[in-house]
Length: 138
Image 1 (cartoon, rainbow, N blue to C red):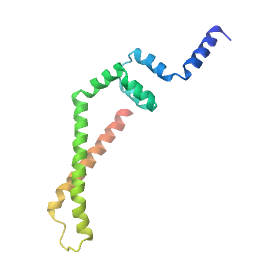
Image 2 (image 1 turned 120 degrees about the vertical axis):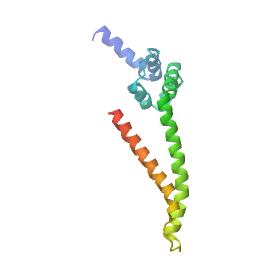
Image 3 (image 1 turned 45 degrees about the vertical axis):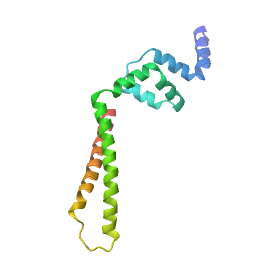
Image 4 (image 1 turned 120 degrees about the horizontal axis):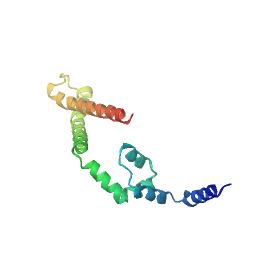
């Protein structure tokens, strides 16, 4: 047993229960905020993630990442797409269920098509976004 290995064992024992301290030391080094950095932050346990997000450096880098035009555009498109899909679903489903289960023998009217088309467009948007997300992570 060398003195260095003894010191390493002591440090491991000392910091084994103090993961937030190791996290603080890591964040004080101010690592470059790339995709891996953000993925590692997401993989932290809940308590450590809360502490990491409260760190000034992480807040600064998250604000810089979110305030860029393209990520903000994607966030807004996601929001609008969710709202459109919810509204169109709320409009289209009662009409369609009345058509299927009602006593009306009328054909499905063409005025019922726009909500269904918007639902399909929203689903296609999410499909494309998920495929792009998977492609960007590989």
